[in-house]
Length: 226
Length: 272
Image (cartoon, rainbow over all chains, first blue to last red; front, side):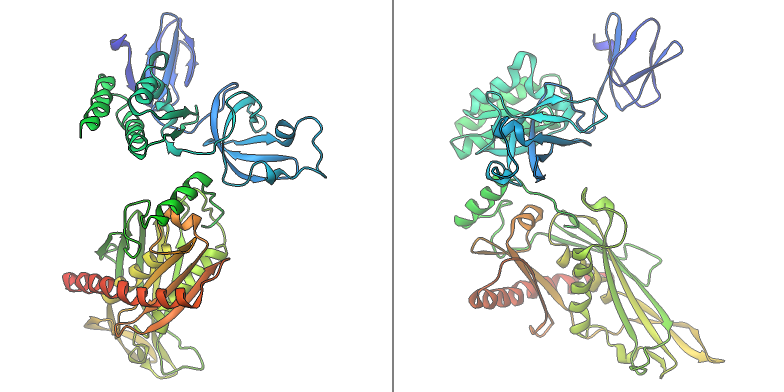
């Protein structure tokens, strides 16, 4: 696997041959060409490039953290760290019998509130439709927002959630990770909070390092003693 | 901010909670400005220039000195003009196009602080009375924004003016002509220092950073001169100050301003 990974820039030929082009690559003739700066990965029959940087591109069913930036009489607008604005219809919060006369949107969510939400629908032609009507979704009442690079989110979660579990266990913090690179950390103790924040920032900065798990573990342990 | 940059409520609550304990988000004391770094002559070909870093706020000022026709009512005085602008690269919410209200305010506050302190001695900038005078133009742009662009722009303009060199002109055939080897220091009399204070809850903080700027209820910018006299004041934001708070801000601006003035002075001395 290791030798199949390489750093690429837009225009680089990742490989040639009968591969299926997946994310961030285009097929031109027989060549598969990268469209972003990132790390290329070649699988048995497909090729993709994991971008090193970039804004969040919504995907249906992604859990994201959104910030309410404004609202109309029918919907809220959410900043979801993307080039698109999240669209949260009032009916999603007030239910089917929502009425513009009797229900005031700012009574439920006001500008500046953070919400855990899910991308309900997105087809690139319209702004992504957001929903918060699900278990664990909705307004976030406490915690601190940490912003990391979108491309580092999988690293923060780790294999089957191993990384984030380790951070949560080591600090007693509750961490909500949005696929859009926004992470909310909540913890009873101020010490745990700052440690969890530091761990998340460390993952963000050192995502490319091979033995990151050990580094994080060391950092979590080390502070316990002091 | 140029357009509304919304701060999340959790951060706002955290800032206020820390202030209740007498602390700030970035660990500073309430009356402590961020670290100021002054780079003189950032633009080698300008008559004077300075780049100022106030924490993560980064601004650049260039000074252009050239002969000009005087204003008809003040033919015995030179001209001084200061502008300030935010570049789109300074913050995601800043767009190109005509300046918005807050950017117009920024330019006016920076200009007023320097103008009303009479820092630039315009009476010495006359080539021939009523015919030709010297104009001094200080243009400031914000390159990176992290709160309190008022003070950063003001320090940059002041530092650039302090270190500006002006050519000398004389009238030859009714035209102002440069005198060879006549370059001299721009005549300045005092060093104005603006100090911006924000009010968050019932707390006054000096030099609010980006997050504090977005969560403050109101602000006041007070400019003092070298004698410690208040020469200009601008209040912004929708909330108000009590009389005691305004007095406190006045004292703070003199105390904090004095320290910053020393930094401007040493930057001036180092450049010579």
